Image 1 (cartoon, rainbow, N blue to C red):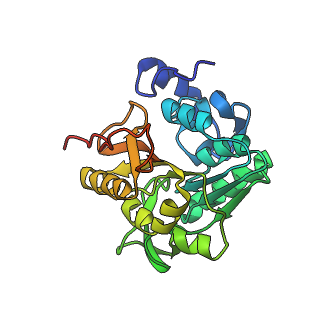
Image 2 (image 1 turned 90 degrees about the vertical axis):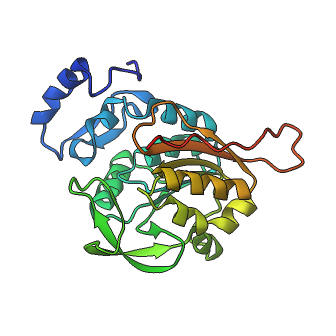
Amino acid sequence: MNDKAPSGKSLIGRMARLPLAVIPRQTVLPILGGKLRGKFWIVGSAIHRRRMGFYEYEKRKIISAEVRPNTVFWDVGANVGFYTLLASKPVGSGRVFAFEPAPRNLDYLRRHLKLNRLPNVEVLATAVSNGNGVSFFQIEETGFMGHPAAEGKIAVQTATLDTLVESGKVLPPDYVKMDTEGTELLALQGASQTFQRYHPVLFLATHGREMHTSSVRLLESWGYECRPLGSDDSGELRELIGRFRPPDDSAMTQYCICPAPNV
């Protein structure tokens, strides 16, 4: 199957989704394309593009090419586990730590791990932030996404990534995929020591112009260089890949601020 299939907004894409509308949401079917082809997936857990193999093609390709065996991958904002599953194969005897606070997503995440028998993944029911404690969490109407908010209806445990590393609850990362629906700067602030000591490769989604610029400036202050991750960004969502470049690196290029969305 061609991973770069027609988008879900095209006529062909809409026609391809028609049969999916009648499939019960709890049905378990194999993923049809990409590196996850053949892995078991619960139909109603997320948008159909994930199971069809069309989802975030360039991002998937880059992460799959980057991750090496016997390494540690953090999936911060794991949702229902798409990137957790993707990373679990290349790390091999390494470890994947999946961070997800939303109860609905946690249930699907754990079920996906059980269905696919992935012993190298550990789930943490935690909202990653710049402080430790409890925070209110707002769930989107679809139930697919959520973020910390004062008006949130559920309470979730929060923790900094630095604290989790220092306490030994997680292993230091080689790679971090982070998508926290608009709180990425807080998550990065709570991981300052970890990034400056272990220099993991970062795959970061930023939500909004100000959040994007602030996050990249923080990464620059840690000696990171960034570039856009893929070419399919839309609206206020921008994604980047960040790498540590020490000052004496002869191959170092000028640090860049990845283009922010036009709003």
